[in-house]
Amino acid sequence: MANYWNQEIECMSREDMKKLQSERLVAQVKHVYENVPYYRDLMDKKGVTPDDIKSIDDLHKLPFLTKADLRDAYPYGLLAKPLADCTEIHSTSGTTGKRVVAFYTKNDIELWHECCARAIVAVGGTEDDICQIAYGYGLFTGGAGLDGGSHKVGCLTLPMSSGNTERQIQFMMDLKSTILCCTPSYAAYIGETLHEMGYTPDDIHLKAGIFGAEPWTEEMRREIEKSLGIKAYDIYGLTETSGPGVSFECEAQTGMHINEDHFIAEIIDPDTGEVLPEGAKGELVFTSITKEAFPLLRYRTRDICVLTREKCSCGRTLVKMCKPMGRSDDMLIIRGVNVFPSQIETVLIEQGYSPNYMIEVDRVNNTDTMDVYVELTPEQFSDTVKDLQSKEKDLAAAMKTMLGINPKIHLVSPKTIARSEGKAVRVKDNRKLH
Ligand code: ADP
Ligand code: ZN
Image (cartoon, rainbow, N blue to C red; front, side):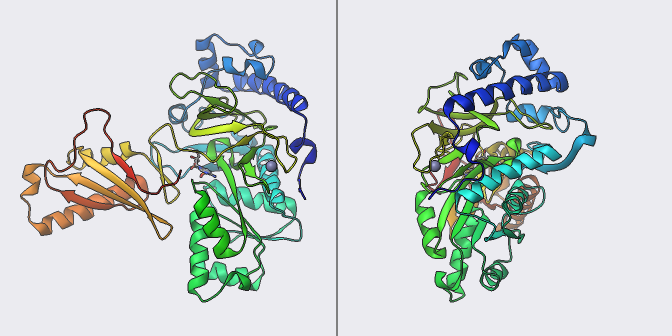
């Protein structure tokens, strides 16, 4: 039995959807060209005018936007509406220099909540449900997005935010929550804690979970489903496109339907920028066709993905994306925080260390760990053990300031970190997420 929030859109014929997307794209390109000088310049440089965009078949003519553009244009350079028309701001988990700030009008919030409402209904949510939201609230988009979706559906919303796990479980039992929304790693941790507290899934009333904002595997899905006695569904999004709800999983649990009436998805070759045919693996690019305040056109997500239009058993006709299979840049997501190796390198150089380092990431008991091995110069190496320990502490503190998370630092002897003959391999990710 399929449940839809907006059946007309979710099950729309391909032809009608293309028409709707084309109309919205044409209007959106005009809106952006007139109101965002930064993007107008990019279009002018490429020799494209709004008149060249007549339907989605012309989408490929538009220039791309990247995270670097967002950085250049920070904070207001991509804003397409007066600030007086904006009602909310959110920001990525990224840190100084990499921060993305997104703006929303009242209507943008409305549409975002609509997308999240579709996700909740797709997992069986109705006004009879009690929706426990354990994504972080605040600048992060997770809490706000699902909270809005839950209200829209008419669920009884339990805005827990993340953390305080025993209290989460207590409320879950006392108030009989039926849907849990949080990151998959937090869901796994809640499951573990439930068992440690001496309970079983029979003691709680959850039936479904909506988990996203970071990569997770099918194994992890099964583990969470077992430990909480639920069905676990994926949800995808990024701050640049509003937040969670760009795509969501249905009962088939075989990929996420993209809300195509709001976002046009393309897959491109990350090296050449060429648009790839359906079914090919490449970088996912989104064009927001309904957002007013922060309408990114052809935004390169860096997520590597495959799109499919194979018929889905749920009846939805919205295109499906697979779980992201990795990234075309070197960004790591550690405990939900975006980390770039270049940030670590910057700290090392600032603090007087050599740029010979190695980052090792792992997941222990469902929590990400980060170890950074840093090679000492022969002069630094002559310090006493006590000096080295205090140096490790100082360096960890400097990293924490830059990254927002605390890595474990290991200062190692000169010439012990392998040199590379080609591209340096700086990251060893043992988490097996893909
Ligand atoms: P948010 O604040 O919504 O997490 P960010 O902009 O910080 O957004 O991070 C967005 C990135 O998180 C995406 O580009 C993608 O790499 C990752 N991500 C989000 N949802 C998922 C998901 N369901 N599976 C895998 N990766 C995801
Ligand atoms: Zn489906």
